[in-house]
Structures are given as structure tokens and as C-alpha cells.
Image (cartoon, rainbow, N blue to C red; front, side, top):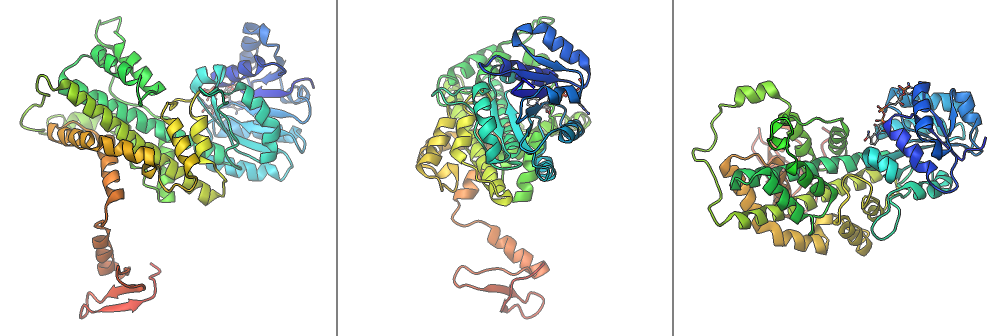
Length: 483
Ligand code: NDP
């Protein structure tokens, strides 16, 4: 075969990735799709790409130069398993199968285990940036063996997004499912980022009465500062859009029910399994669920809110908007801090050598959460690779300290005004929980010991203790409870 790389699955993502690959010097790209129409469309619309098309798996595999490398971009789940099994039957030891779909990392770990016994490399790769990213430069998060990355890395570096400092947004994240795990957390952070922005918009709109177009200007200005990011940028674009049919702001005619494809929920499910408090991400996922509970929302629509309507006093709007901006920045720091905590916990649990700073770097371009702020995260981990939480790094500590008065005012006003700010509020609660010298967890241990003899430790001496609650209430020293 003559192609140095192949793509299986030519829907929007696969087609665009194939075109991206073909546009790079030195690549000859084999393409294959289950239904041949998609292959015909792609090759006829893009003769300049010089694709090597196939109508079947035998032909596709024969068109690849050895060692063969193929990227699968099909529907995650059963579709991916079906394609893998066809390729595995035809590939040889040393060949590389890359799954660029949105696979659940548990599936990736399973597949890698099954496939590695054949000598074929299996690489689960997170791809972020949607269709546009796939075509012009995505952020790429490949897992799999370090050996496979030696072949794959140089190809991926040419198609990945390029960060402002010229570095390609791709790194070998870790073995087996590491890439898909990190992509999952990326999506979870994306949910939190979007929810925080939405809460900021809602507060400004309800508090100041500004129109969506006026609020677009606020976001456009925020995008020139420390909040600079793709999501802030597109927020301004969406808010500025007028609906052609009604002449109303588009945001006012869009049904207020947020959809989800599941990766946010995966991030939270795995955070629960790993015992990592990713409350910002969780609240963002739950906020979308709540928005879609139409029947409950209708039934609850006449539940009472605050007695008095709330508006920012005339002349205070700019100060309020600045408070909201700071609250947004502080909450965003918490969301990322929690997301990186999950990456650290996942790496520990599944045995991945993940370089946190490198993850921040490959998210600087190409992906949905791309932001200036990611440089700060990379710097924080470079300064202190054993940093226990992002929020305690000097830069972030100062940023949150500078924002906290605003943050508290905004969360207090939101509560009093009856404006839901689950992500702002939970981020602040997390921050206060994290920095608390004493937590009421001591009382919870007391309760647990009372009803289940779950024991407790003391602040003043080592050992494990139990109070004889149903006896004379004296304390005994015990061995750790097994229940
Ligand atoms: P879809 O997820 O809509 O999947 C359609 C493709 O899967 C078609 O090529 C289809 O072939 C193929 N397919 C489905 N089942 C099988 C099967 N059993 N055997 C062979 N091929 C099969 O396509 P997208 O381009 O939207 O996404 C591709 C992957 O990329 C998905 O895993 C998605 O989650 C992921 N992804 C998507 C992003 C996005 O923004 N859309 C961003 C990042 C990742 P056929 O034409 O024959 O039906």
C-alpha cells in the first residue's frame, strides 16, 4: 500500500480529519466508510486531497503502507467495536489502530487489553474542537503505548492546533485509556465553564436590565482580559444575534432546555467513583438536567420567590458587572482546579504518568475550553510539579483572594434575589470548605459512630476510638471498623 495513514468513518469528523491529514506535506491518506456514498462524496468534493479510497476492509488495509496506521472516527460504542474487529482480523503486529471517537475510557482500557495481546497497538485518542477543529487543527489527546506514539506523534503534530507560542496541541497523555479520560475531563470542565458564563449573563441581565446585545459588549470586553477564551468570545456572538423571524434577540427565542451527549455526566460519575469533589462540574451537569425537566418546571412556576423584585441601583451597574466578572474568574479557577484533581486521581487509580502542565498546554488551542488562562495552569505545574491543588498555587491564590469579596457579594445577592447560580455558589462553598481550619465533618464522624459504630480518630492522640453510645457513653480504643 501507498498510504501512510488511513481514516475509517467519513461522517463530519472523519472527513474533516482526513482532509486535515491530506493537506499536510508527506501524507497520503487512505479513506473508507461502511456506506460507500460518504467515501464518494468526500473524494469527489476534494480531488485536491489525493485520497486513496476503498470500498471494503480488505482493500482499505491493502492500501496502507506497513506498519499500518488507521484512525477510526465512527459512532462511539458498538460502531467502534465493529470497526476494530474488522481491522484486527487484517492488521499485523506493530500496526496501529487509533480510536478518535468519544469513547468511554473504560471501553478504551478494555479494548487495549484485548488488542495488545495480538501485538497490534491500540491508541484511544481524545479529539476536541468539533468539526472545525478536526479540519483546521484539533487538540489531540492520544493514549496508548509510548512506542506507538513514536510513529503517531510526528503525524499528529502536523495536524494539531498550534498554541500561541508555536507548540502543537498534542502530547502522549499516558497509556491505554489516559487520552480518553483526559478528553472526558476536558468536556466536564467545558460544562462548568459554560454554566458559569450562563450564570454571569443571567445575573447581569436580571440585575441591570441590559439587553443581550449590550451584554454581548460586556463579554467582548471581558475577552480582552484574563477571561479571554473561545467560550467568552462565542458567548458575545450568540448574545448579539437577532432572530430573523421575530426580530428578537436569538437567545430569547431559543427554548431554555440544555441538551447533553453524556461526557459531562461521565466526568461526574467517575469523580464520584474516585472520590474527587468536582462540584462545579456536577452542578453544571445538574443545571442542564433541571433545565430539561419541563413538567416539573411548569408545576413549580408559581412557587414563591423573594417578596421584592431586585435590581441593581442606578449608577451601580458597572460595579456590579465587575463583581460578576471577578466571581466568574474565581469560580472558573475552582472548576479547573477540581478538573485537574480528577485527572490526578484518575492517573493514580489507573497507573498513568500524566504531566498536568502538558495537559494545560495542549488545551490552549483547538479545543472548546481554549483560553489564555491555561498558560497560568501550565506555569503553576512547571513551578511546582507536586502542587496539591491548583487553587493554592501563588498566581491562583492571589487571583481568588483578589476576587473573593466580589464573589461573596454576587452569591449573596443571587440568593437574596432568587436567581439560580449553582456553579457560582457551589464553587464558593468548595473554596470555603477547602480553606476551613475545622469542618463539621467531626460531627458527621460522631453521628456515624453513634448509629453504626464506625469509630473516629481524635485530634489529640493517635488511635481509633468508639463511644459506647447505647451503654455508659464512655470511650473505648478499638481497631478500625470494617463496615
Ligand atoms: P457519528 O458519531 O455521527 O457517526 C457516524 C459514522 O459512524 C458514520 O461514518 C457511520 O458509517 C459510522 N458507523 C456507525 N456504526 C458503524 C459500524 N457498525 N460500522 C462501521 N461504521 C459505522 O459521526 P461524527 O463524525 O459526528 O463523529 C465521529 C466520532 O467522533 C464519534 O465517536 C464522536 O463522538 C466523535 N467526536 C465528535 C465530535 C463532534 O463535534 N461531532 C467531536 C469530537 C469527537 P455509515 O456512514 O456507514 O453509517
